[in-house]
Image (cartoon, rainbow, N blue to C red; front, side, top):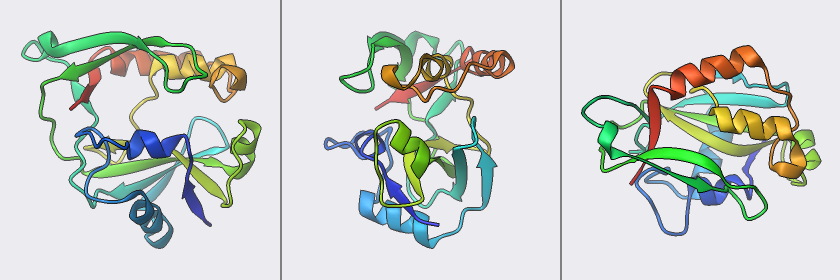
Length: 185
């Protein structure tokens, strides 16, 4: 099985201007090499058959991406309308500013199959393509954000994957993200 970083994931995980809330201490090439050379601790099923999650012990100083919302940090929450790419519609997002989360114990790499990526207009020269990565304290998936689930249900033409919305998964997502937020450095 071969894995490559997609053009979608590369600037998000390894931006030109490094940020504290992205992958640290490793180049994109070394990250990709590690994924191909080091078997994951476990493989989780993703939200659809074309999606797999590879759980790796964090070998970097990358910090946990989501943080519980508390009375002590609630005043640090920010929000705005943003699009992940120039072709997507902006959606409401929120994040913390001014916090120092712990170093993640795990990097959970989100992979899409070559066939799915081709359906979404991305051709890769590998079996699987990295579309994202979760930085977590536990070796378990962080629920997909509700807005990402909605975007996926809108279809490929709106930046999603075309997977219909599952109400139970959506409710679990809302329960988690109601009490957590990502952060920006």
